Length: 281
Image 1 (cartoon, rainbow, N blue to C red):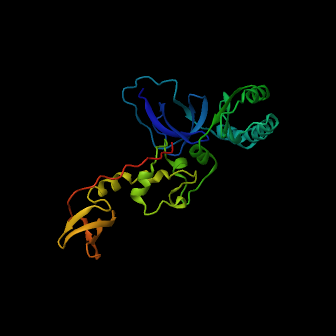
Image 2 (cartoon, helix red, strand yellow):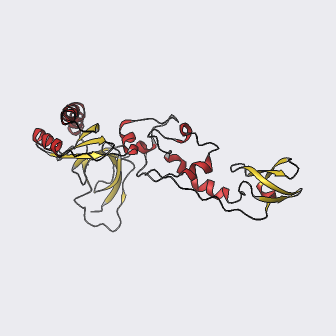
Image 3 (cartoon, helix red, strand yellow):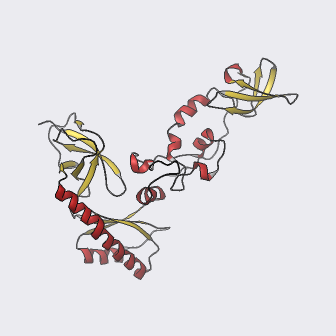
């Protein structure tokens, strides 16, 4: 029997992974019961399955167990609307009693009951061993306290970005890649945090989407303060527009002119200034 693989999104923080299956006719957005490294969870198919080359036998994990039934959906609804809310309230009460410096964001009951995940943020390392003991005694299952960074926290509790679209990290991003100030400077005329920061407060992930294009277009553009030659003589670059591929120069007499980059001859190309790349992982 052929083995297929299907990409799915699962869990409270919208993780993405590929699951093996022997069901060839799974459609996009189909709700599935899958086995992850944590246990049984519900997952949403992101696209139809494709043949898993080189795999002859269906692995035990990660694996699609079945297409979710009506009973599966009802159980998941009960977990989310009743049990998780109760666990959230109880855990917050215990955090307050133990005087722990942490903020609980959400709770996730695994569909198969193998464990309960408690997502939190904290400014520093937290000794939550006593809290885990109390929770394990209360719920009689494995307890995992998962500390989140600001990006994962935003993906968990927020929904839309200031562009009006659903957060990229919730909708399709598989992983967070570092975004540098260099990328922002290359694409923006301003470093106003309100214009280049995402919902998490970090530099927007979408700055990377066109970074390659901007880098390629910038190769034809001289640096500011670089000496160049035009049909009118030598001048100094005082500005440029990467998208329009134009360069603004100033001549010795103070006169300024904007020209296509193709009409500029670089006399002594300058290297871009080295700067510390502030990365947000």
